Amino acid sequence: MSLQAHYSPVAQAMEQNPLRPSWTMQRPGLISLAYGFPDSASFPYDELAETTAALMADHNAEALQYGPVSGPEPLRSFLAGWVGATEGLDVGPDNIMITSGASQGIALAARLLVPPGGTVIVESPTFIGALWFFRGLGINVVGVDTDELGIIPSALRETVTRQRRAGAHVSLVYTMPTVHNPVGFNAPVERRRQLAEVAEEIDLVFLEDDAYGDLIFEGARPPALYAIAGRERVIKLGTLSKLVAGGMRLGWAIAEPDDISRMCGLKADSATSPFAAWVTGAYLQSGALARRLPSLLDLYRRRRDAMLEELAPLRDLGCDWITPVGGFFVWLELPEGADSEAIRERAEENGVTYLAGHHCFAHDRNRRCIRLAYSYIPEDQLREGTRRLVQTLQAELTAAAPS
Image 1 (tube, rainbow, N blue to C red):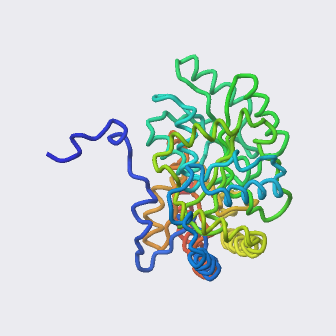
Image 2 (cartoon, rainbow, N blue to C red):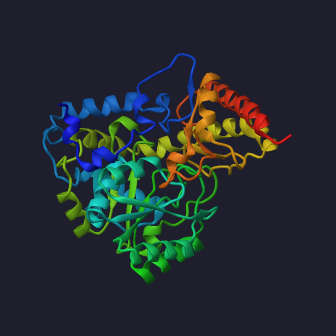
Image 3 (tube, rainbow, N blue to C red):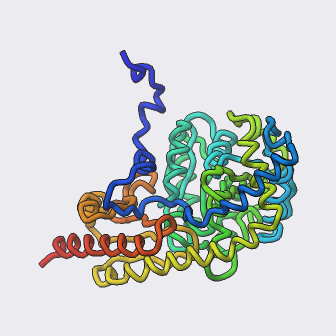
């Protein structure tokens, strides 16, 4: 007998995440446009080494000791000041909890607000990771219709009402209104206000994932849903994975102090990597992020533009996309009838791979979208991989077109 006979119902129901099995695998000759990782060459290697050495030279025992569950105060104070300066949010250290990336914040907010067997509403499409985190908690996930401005307010009202009439417990809406992953839009202020009105009307809470808000390439950053709907209706998440280094695994949650305290009580890891948090806090307090951000914006803007330039021939075949306002991804829509999962095998034969877009939907309903990441690989490989994708799609879509 194997352990499988004792798997929980949640474990038995979970399918394999299409990204995780090959995170550490490199197939010779295959260029991956699937992974939304930060650029490795951009990591602040020397600065982090110097910060770590300084902490150790000072015999900073707090950096090596168990710490407060909410995270070290220096990092929380920096983040409170950062969101105050960049977003105008009036929060202090007690409003902030350090998490293992934004991922842990998603899971903790769900545990705080969704009962076992409850339902969470997500955008269609949404961040693939959030779908896996919710399902791993045994939560039902229901998609709500979106347009180019984000969640459609009337659709949110109708979806929640329908679910509640069917007996579901629904109070939490997971959303990325700023630099949406995977589509790449910013929801305008008026749409955010409309969503806040719906939340007040039918009693909803938003989990606002703001992973890419510091990486907007053009235009002003919209006001956070946290600022518009109010802190009684929003838990706001952020991450340092895209700004410092993914391997530090540090993010944060912003909420009222009582809610932060209750979320701390739900943390299985007690305190999130105190050593990494101390190093990162000391590094950031030196003013490093403000100095670093312009180069990151320039790097990822150039990567985005390179991918879009190579994708341009696909317009003639009926493919569509928006120019992402920031972040790491292009969301490519193929013509009606195309199946991105079926085409992926042909693409890999041609030396390129991607994330088929149906994985980004709660109910696997859209088979003609592709999520393309431009953040991870150098520009020459990015251009070559995108050319291979274009060649593959030209062959497949032309062959499938009616004569």
